[in-house]
Length: 345
Image 1: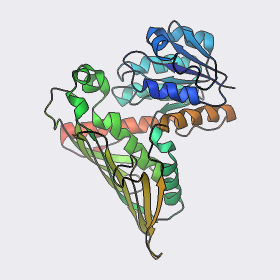
Image 2 (image 1 turned 180 degrees about the vertical axis):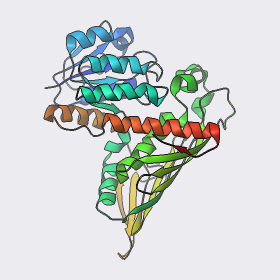
Image 3 (image 1 turned 60 degrees about the horizontal axis):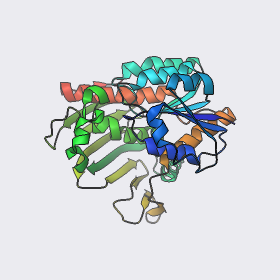
Image 4 (image 1 turned 120 degrees about the vertical axis):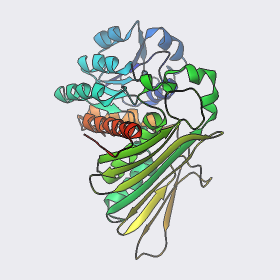
């Protein structure tokens, strides 16, 4: 059975999400963590699933001695490429916490290395594994709405976090360390969802970014973007830290023979995640409701990587797709600076 490694430190995001994912993972022989911070975080998780855990002094020692098949690499964006490279050089598949770099050009050689070694390199765009998203994708691919024409996506999070001194001191508030702000930290999930639903990619992007909260952060707290896809679809995206707590979200997709919409966070209906769609010519709209709890997305994502390795199967997204998402971010930020529609390489 595969061995799983978690590489992180005190600056890393989503540490507990990944520790919980590891603790609940099935068909794993051993789990390993490294460094002094990990030593303080993992003990409360190590008995949850019964899988043995090991601790190493540092990341290099872990990779050389433990030799994992799958590794989760979660570090600030400006420090992540070195650890991703270290893991790939050790011959392990990598789940990299997004955005995993501060510009796409830093990720490109890592994607080439992963492909040359026949290893997974996946940004952790975990929402794509949620049952609601899988169902929506099936509907789109089975032609329930016909040819996709247009989409609107929005995700609004709390502005409260921005006003915390800890946030202001953190790497996520600094564009030079984080790639960008809301778009590269949260909006990337919705960019991935659109490519996943439609099996297409982006060709052009335009964007406006702002610090609507007027706080001294160099990473944006709001963004409005327009995107063009290779299949001809046009999409609008609006993201920002606007509400006092929680989330508001929505995805709508219109096609030649119907429409589809859903709420990833389950905040609009109050009844959990809802998926609504209509096929023209059929009586009325249809609805399915899914559990509103979002805590299991990372666990599902990590488990799928473990299972793919065990089956010697293709990953759920290839290194080239992760690179494409990052190049889309690059184009959006270039557009915000230039005021022009930018092409995506």
